[in-house]
Amino acid sequence: MLNKEQLKNEIKAAFLAEQTEERDYNASLERICTRIANAIDTFVKSGVVTVQAGIPVSTAGNAISQTGATTSTGTGTIS
Image (tube, rainbow, N blue to C red):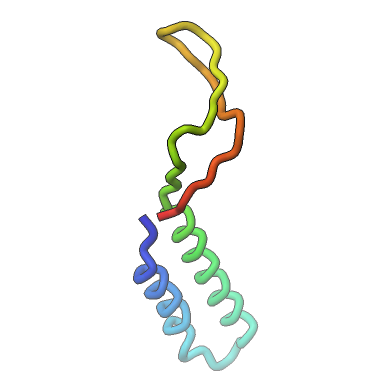
């Protein structure tokens, strides 16, 4: 499930970690950007995608072992 509070805390921590940097602005900016990118990546990947039931599928195999894929697009939500 998406946790906006955790994302906010990770972004805040990225800035707090660099508050006292006085010598290398560019390196500091790079570290902040990396930490924020990692936080967003983790945030997005933590989401659960739920799609509505009823998407048509095509299957092959027998009653015990089936394989298949959807045959049309569906609309989902990330939570």
